[in-house]
Length: 229
Image (cartoon, rainbow, N blue to C red; front, side, top):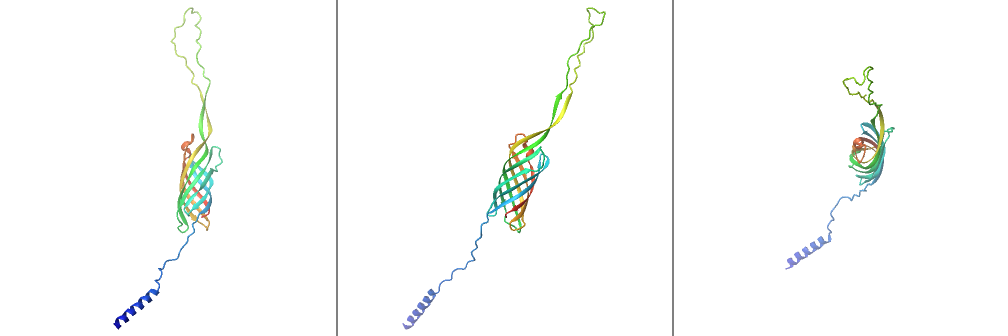
């Protein structure tokens, strides 16, 4: 009996000591807080394009806000810098784009512009003016000594002179309004913390032009200096 009481006391002391030792909390890694980057950007932009089978140079700019460092929402506008009365274009509108995370200093992405604009192009026409056209002939009188008779001569149809057409080439101007959609793919490289260079290729598709139609469509290539990264 005494041995049993000693064993019971030993078990009670051991369980009490174990209960007093707290269970260690599970270890976890450090808590990392990352700031969401919503930057404003603006970029002077220069484009080269094919317009009406001629090379056009477009100057302009785009800007907007980049949400979560990937989604761009803003606007853009461009106009032709070629100084010619028969070669003018200006357009702009809403700009939406996407860019990848930064790989080293490089980013890949794409964007699209949807809006409207105006254009003035020339086309050649040829105007024609008819010359003087005279119709009819005079029948000569009967020879002397022949009275009451008319010479029986074969009758030939009168010859009508061919009208002389004078052509004059002219250059006319046509001004038209249109809606535009211009998607493009681009690559950007960071130069400093807040400045980068962006280049890309795209295609300008227009609709709604009454006269110029598909003469306003064409590929584009651009180079921009982007402030904000």
